[in-house]
Length: 447
Ligand SMILES: Cc1cc2nc3c(=O)[nH]c(=O)nc-3n(C[C@H](O)[C@H](O)[C@H](O)COP(=O)(O)OP(=O)(O)OC[C@H]3O[C@@H](n4cnc5c(N)ncnc54)[C@H](O)[C@@H]3O)c2cc1C
Image 1 (cartoon, rainbow, N blue to C red):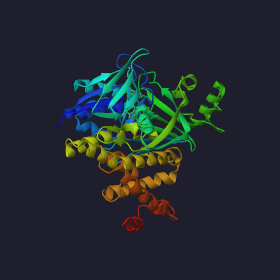
Image 2: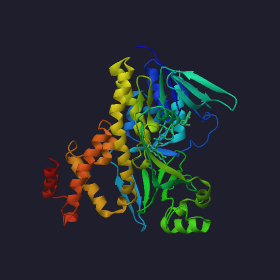
Image 3: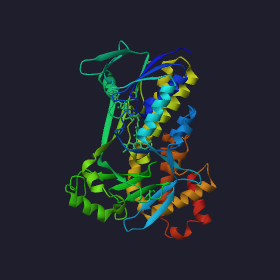
Image 4: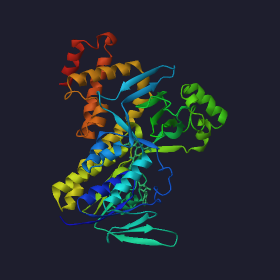
């Protein structure tokens, strides 16, 4: 194998993991990161405070021997705990017994991946902001301070600099036919905190992802190791009920007390947080091409930013790293083929998870509170138990089946959903759902 001099822009979650994969293959890897070293001065990593890590992400971590280290800093969440508007609760397991997703702190995970990258001999250059790429000379320019710039030469450059990637913009500006789409949804998000109880315990069931579905919007909460929960309110920017309308402390308090009555007593500082924490937007980015010959590729959010409603953005970026590594294994030094095949394989999957993620917003905020939807999930779980290969609920395909491609999960999920829509129309489905007749009807449609 010929050693390559590889430059990665961005020491986020994906750039850090990618560096370890490449170093393990014997390449010389340098990462250039715009921010300062967050391990020296703890601060918000900039986006959500915690993330759901599921089997795709874990598989990618496992392949480089990191899964156990990361599991140690994660909290398992076995299902959705639904807080209905009428004060009732419901619990939906995510999958079969023993299947769960993991709540992990973004900052802790990122810092751990940086530590592990350095242990693999990778140098991370902080406070280096990528400004420009000279495609003809294989060189990238970084700003270090107002007075100082640095030019770095490379054999291969990876743009892992997130949803608003400057490397992607450079690529776009100097590529004749570059397709680019970005879509903002009309909801933004704001994070709030549920602290531990007076006795120092978690204030809610710890091993669950909590959801307050309210049709046009929702709040969710994920547990943290320090026994807090981070709540995220996904809420319209504009309109009758929106961030723009909740413009005084009284209005915000009245809204929360009416809408999330069981959460309010658990959030002593929520009004203050509501006005001090940022309101952030949610974007999907689709673009093409992701690569140039044998010398450049976009990866992670820089290639495919998606909305967070399937909890897959990071998982998908980690999967990019695993698939790329398999292609390096298969193609040796042929980087043109490695990068070409990487793009060919990953682009349809990234597009599929982007669409699945947007659709899951409706499911989470609207359908999880609907008894008919809960029944549908029960029927699907029963089918999955009995016919584990034939019927895999869409959520399980995406979350617990890392060898099913996202594009396949999208197609199979659509087919199954169409079948279930028909079944849920049966007049007595509430009483007949466990019958042999209903099961046969589903299997016939499936086959
Ligand atoms: C609210 C929210 C909740 C989410 N929840 C989940 C979840 O539960 N599960 C999940 O899998 N995903 C989730 N995601 C998605 C996940 O956060 C992203 O997919 C993931 O962070 C992508 O990693 P990345 O390394 O590609 O990009 P980033 O994490 O954005 O990292 C990019 C890095 O590049 C650096 N950088 C940027 N520009 C430059 C430059 N010009 N020069 C040098 N460095 C630069 C940045 O400082 C940063 O360190 C969520 C996202 C949001 C917004």
